[in-house]
Amino acid sequence: MRQWLFNTFWRFPTRLLLRPFKQFDALKYEHAGSYAFAFFVLFLEALVVIMDYVYKGFLINYSDIYRINSLYLTLTVLFPVALFVVGNWCVTTLLDGKGKLGEIFQVTMYAMFPMCLLQWVALLLSNVLILDEMVIVTALQSIGAVLFALYLFIGLAVIHEYGFGRCMGGLLLTVVAMMILVFILMLLFALVSDVVDFVRVFSKELMLKFF
Image (cartoon, rainbow, N blue to C red):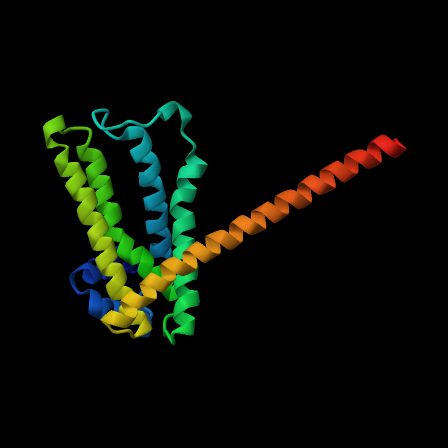
């Protein structure tokens, strides 16, 4: 158990940060990745978003902490991740991508890991640095975003067996697919809302007429 925890939560993630091509290849062909670690990173990212909203240094925290909605903040992490994973899987299936849905999810979470760590560091530093030093917090967050994009690109290229151009095109089409999925979901929610309103009004009319 201890060895599994060490390999899952330390050895493989740190090796991936140093040698992403080789380790993403191992994730696909040797099943070296872990859903446990992927969900752990997802949990950490959702938690840091909530903590950042409340506990970011007061010098740069403009949030109304008395109106915090933890569920909404959590969904701001879960929904984009789910949307990206499904959108990328839909697109790459049509483009002969070799990656499976679970592999795309794992790659996304492993790529998010360094960004998540830097966000936690930035959150801590925001409470101890003076205003003139807050540029360090912004720099850490920016570096995290760049690393996330870089590792995500490498990971997707490896698991789908794409070259640079095809992977870039796949990502652009993924964005389009995400927009289409959002549009479909909006239509679905609107339809469900109309059906609920119809049932409510119909039930009310029946109650007034017969009871």
